[in-house]
Image 1 (cartoon, one colour):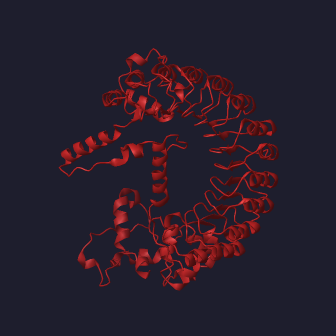
Image 2 (cartoon, helix red, strand yellow):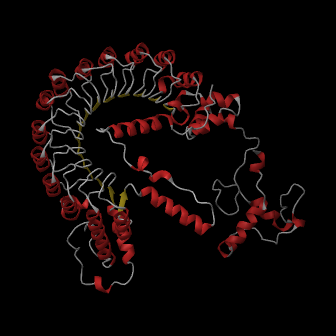
Image 3 (cartoon, one colour):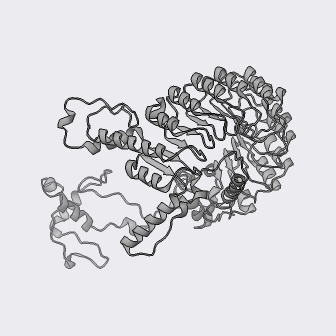
Length: 587
């Protein structure tokens, strides 16, 4: 440390030389003799010329280290441990978790600092969940104590029931608890933690078989401040536990109960009546859910929902859709994939009454036709994502009308047409030609209104001076692109009438405004890799990120046996393929 404080004098002389005329009239400026070996002492520091000694004696030390003729006031033998503990902890608070772990190896004093509770208000084991031991995890929790607010133990199978009980006693102020995939914790240990976490606001225990109805009853009685609850795919709960939650956690805003059986009329009515702040409700794959139960919820609800997921609830009919359209005017995200009983009548009523939908998922609604797509194009101005995969009756004309002349032409960013057998190359080439035309128009009109749409079928308004502009046309176009982020992504996997030539022609016309994900994407990646290798004289490497199994978005609610197998493979990959972070060394 002393070596850092011994600043060579020639650094100041170089500074004076660089300042030149600006510092030549300063009364305290030093002469700038040429640097030579004779001007240095044995310790490597430059000696002050004798002629400059009077000036040096008259110089006063200034607190402004940037002023000419001043030098910082140095303290010899500085020791980090001499700082107050509060200041040292404040410095450590700026370190990442990995750096804290490395600092703990420096010395015993630093190790004690790294275990200060104020440094561990947020424990997220995601980067090192594979390497951290039970003892290390417990040491972190005990060290955090009452400071711990966010505890993310997702996927940490080292977390045992005993550890969770100990943390329950040491960490009573936890507000966020993530236990997803912690399959080694027991039912009593979770109940023990929940019973003492009175400040809990977010709880995720999805997929745990150890969650049962009496666990949810403990949550209802001990966590009145709970706002977000995820109990999706907990196989040992049913409507009785959800009813208890609705009775006790009346501040809930987000409830996810995917796959929950026995959601009867009483349970759904309790959810709607007792949760006035509910904004997001996920009921996907609740196979027992019928019209009557969902109507009971709709009738008693306060109408503040913005996100509703009833995908793969195969018993839902158009009767529910009519009520949703009239009740939830604030709805922006609606997922109805796999609700195969829905028809054009219900969907047309829905899209004509709800004009603020951003995300609409209609996958595998094989009864809907071009009529529904035209209604969507006519009414939805804010639509960003539309999924009609598996809707086999939808044709090119409806899709072309949606993209070129629909109200959502300004906002649409993602269009999924997987397994739409009636979609052909004509749809892709027409969309690509339109986008290319829009790009050409904007490139020729740098002063055009940036609010004009690149996808709109009507040309933008041009002023009289636009024809004389010869420069910055591309800059104007890029500015419009940057502001509106106009890029359309189209998925056409499993479309029998989509050919490689059609995909390639469309991309050549409209890239980068158009992205197409298809069966042929892997071949494009391979060709690009071979071309790059030929240019660089390096061995070719094939990027497999465009392969069919990776390009295709993982479907939430597959109907065919092949899709079920693919989902299982991808789920296993996600569960076991997370990257390993640095090892945890705190013990």
